[in-house]
Length: 123
Image (tube, rainbow, N blue to C red; front, side, top):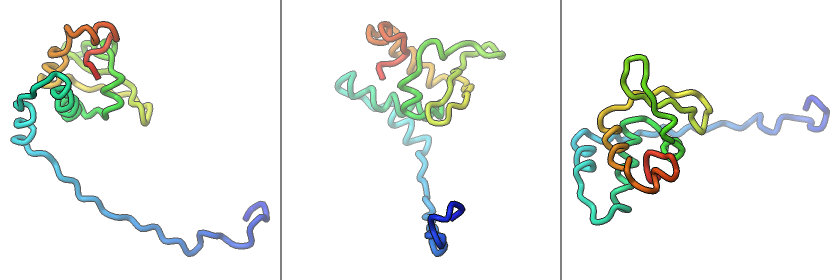
């Protein structure tokens, strides 16, 4: 319109529709059930480990996948923290490493793939 290419605004009568999304949250019992579930193979065990790690860190899958050992260091309080720029927003994140997330990291620490990739997990 400013350049004179259009006579009228094509979006003048457009009304955006916003559909409210009601999110369900997992209960503590459901998360605990997922943590305690026994799987027949290491490959199958990896999926809930990634999900539980995301639950306890708040990181998206892509951010978890990109984590390396360099992203984990001691914070001002002396505890381990995750320092990482988020993939989607490129904003800095400083996340305390809760015991459950640390247990998952420790679970895969000696795996050959983790050592080769300098990553803390197979994913």
